[in-house]
Image (cartoon, rainbow, N blue to C red; front, side, top):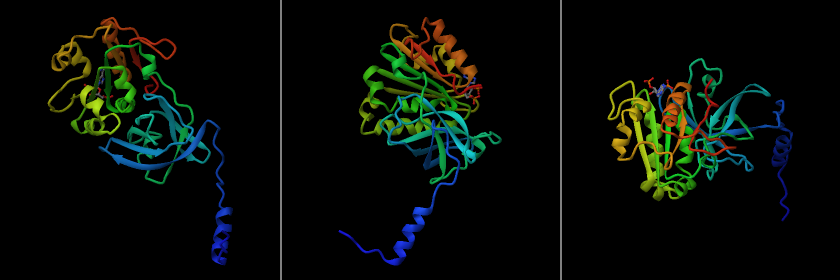
Length: 283
Ligand code: A2P
């Protein structure tokens, strides 16, 4: 049915047609997306969610370039793990705030409605496809290294492939565990994966620089045997155990050395094997 426009509606329609994006276009590998929510966990940590392009596909555990157009058309980008599972309608990222960090000094100020720049091509090694079959999956993380695992523990495929999923998260301070504690609590209640997670997901947090119910670096907890004793599990077994590691370069190297000492072999997308590390975030 044709409805006659009032003169005011007519003027408004004309005006909206004339509002054009005057900014320089971005390279074809990037898109502009809108921030939908932001949550600050501590003065050093926050997560944010953004709109997801309809054609944006990724495998749980992958990372993508994210940034801000500090100068129009010239975005400053960093690699960020996608923290939501692949079925989520939005994209989630967990970030540190570096006071003078070129990107995070600005990124920490974003609010719903703001724009961020998103790469079109996610990639990464912390994916289920890069592991050979096993029965237990250890996800070892420190600090914001929990982000790719926040994706994997919410993916039903993780529980199809493994009988036990052990998510460890070590931080300097107790307050920095909050994102992981919330993640695990929500995952256990999630309508899609909650039932599997309640049965199979084990959360193993520890703190290194203040008192907590469990203290120590994950490497120390592995070497002393405390991890296995507390979980009632045997030491690493190359036939049963699969491992993914995400943290600082030092943490990656030290944890990788323990996996290798136990006889596990490092895998990749091209050559799936028994443990995986992601080096994209460390310098
Ligand atoms: P620690 O406090 O003993 O250094 P960061 O913020 O420096 O990345 O550290 C995050 C967590 O990772 C901290 O609890 C820290 O412990 C721990 N960590 C740092 N280096 C290593 C390492 N080489 N192996 C295992 N854990 C580490």
